[in-house]
Amino acid sequence: MTPPTPSSASDYRFLLLIIPPIFILLLASGLFEFSSNITVDNFHTLTNWLMHSTPETQEEPFSATRFLVEVKSRYIWLTTVVLALVAGLYAFILCAMIIYQCHPRPRLMVVTTIGLVFALGGVVFIWALDESHTLYRAVFGFSYDNLRQAGPQRIGEPLLRYVMVVVSVVNVQALIVPVVALLAACSTLAPPVSGQPPDPTFYASQMKRLKDVLTAASAILVSGILHMGAWLRWPAALVADKAGQEAVLGTALAITLFWGVTFTLMLVATYLPAALVLAKQAEALLLDGPSETADPEPEQWLKDHGLFLSLQDHFPQFGLILAPLLASPLSSLLISPLSPTG
Image (cartoon, rainbow, N blue to C red; front, top):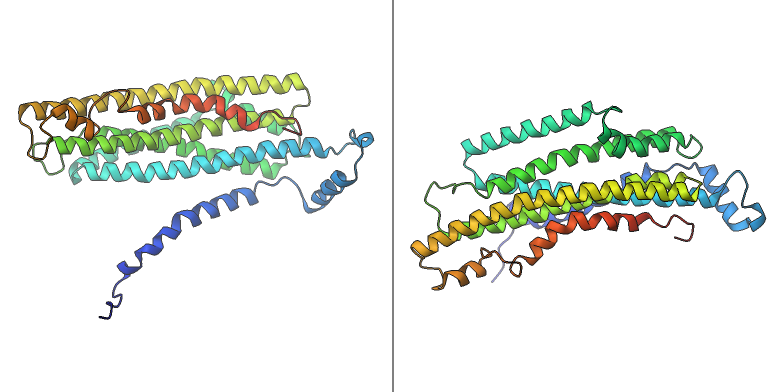
């Protein structure tokens, strides 16, 4: 028997799988291409110096060693930029889909409006930040001003403009995507779209969605901490004094540790109450009148469907909650040591 001939565009939907990896490749290639701070002539000067220099010429005005240490720090930062942008896009799409699935149209409009208000408020807030705000000086201004002070021979004006654009995009995304994730977490507690009374199976599906939101939220927060750590540590590569380098690295660790703890507490405050509500509501329905598909033993049914709250049953979720805190010391390993052999 001859197989049926493809007759519609839906038969070629499998080709859509090519879009995500191509997008990531183009994003990384673009970021890499525009991040250079070396001309063609200087590139040949660099390679010639590396191949023909001797220990006696290490103190020449052009130091390939110091230049390459800065390059290493810069591309480690760009690595975290790619990670943050891709994780943010993944989280945005996943959480937006969960919001869409959890609400009928009228309620969806209300939730969307609330999200727009919070997102626009965050963008206005970050736009209004200047040197009078500690958040601006400690996170963005600290690194940017150090890069600017390094001078045009080390960090040129085109690279500074490029850095400003990239960091601004990452910061705007870092404000918008968490709003969507928080609304997605709230949506898992919403009544069923059908308007019918919920059953235990409904709460099991909502718990699964809540775990998906936790995974996405943890991904964006961890990538944010890694980006913040690499961004704050980049100027250390431009500091000639070893003690000054250590001071910059220590400051970066302290700041990322502060925000790592904050993000972890935010995940705790979001996931645990929602999970507790879903588990209690499902347990109450099972005890009042077990459904036909439920296990005769309510506790076993809750465990099988992820609705039994215990460290053993939710160990992966507790790991995701702690991930932003653990990412702080991990970020310090990305760029340290700053020695040429590091």
